[in-house]
Image: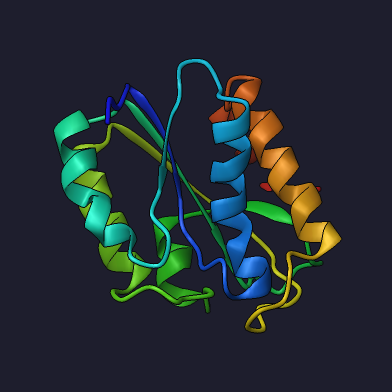
Length: 158
């Protein structure tokens, strides 16, 4: 796999409703690739992709995952590493997401964790319309240049 200077790293389980937001974003990118961006689907074990990311040493990495932030379903928000450590994230991952973020900080120049508020993470349920809309929003944001400053103010979009 040829990995570039900008990586969109998605995380989530396709078996758990809105937790599939990350994998759905990967699917959109595979159907219509975004110029200048490599996409890695970390699935339920994103730590398995750390070696690949370390080798690439990307300038920018955007990690996208479902996150229970107490917001309206489909809300999109940048989450700081400190917030990741204290908030209840949807976690189907084998290691804590804080461990993953710490490892990524060692090999990436610029990182942004983007959380999408799920509505339903029940097993075998489909993505809700609100979360699908949020996935499309994130795809469009990355395609438009992924301006990290967009999340600096209110840090919430829909």
